[in-house]
Image (cartoon, rainbow, N blue to C red):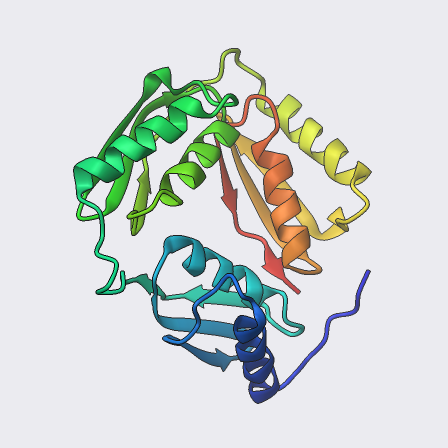
Amino acid sequence: MAQTVTRNAEDIKRDVCSHLSWDDRINESNIRVEVADGTVILSGTVPTYSNLAQAEKDAYQISGVKSVDNRLTVLFPETSPSPADAEIASRVVDMLHWNPTIDDSGIHVSVLNGVVKLTGDVHSSWEKSRAGYIAINVEGAVGMENLLHVQPRAVVLDDEIRKDIEETLARNAFVDASGIRIEVKDGVVTLSGTVEDDRSRRIAERIARYTDGVRSVNDQLAIR
């Protein structure tokens, strides 16, 4: 595993700015970057939600970054006005219906001022997460309220869930699970402790979310 690197704020800021400028997927012209104690603070505006999410991912890729405080907001260019709420909702419904991995029969979609709200039921935590990802990446969406309720098809005991997560983490070549603590209560998984980097944190969170019987994941992992 890579060693933890301590770097000064100006070097981290320079590299984050350079990385955002390099990434052709992102319009970084209105993004401001500040760094304090290993935390990168992103503020300003971007034209799409995918830009907002990708900017955070890019910041995490820089050595020395321990956390990202993403304060970016979505502001559509005046030359490309935002679609109406009804049009956004219709697009979300279509995208969810066309996705073969999600049972959308229990999902209800509403949109207010570009903010998409998902309510209803799905059968797994990963379906909830994927539905949210699909919805927020529809053109015109500027925010998300994912209020989907996870109702697993079968009840899995908390101890079985915890054991499945522990064993899967132990098999993974990209995660040092020695610093991870796992608690499960009524299907809700809490991950705490420390990991080496953001990639390890994301992998651990996905492993928990994809485990059978999990209703939600509370990610409290810190980068050491």
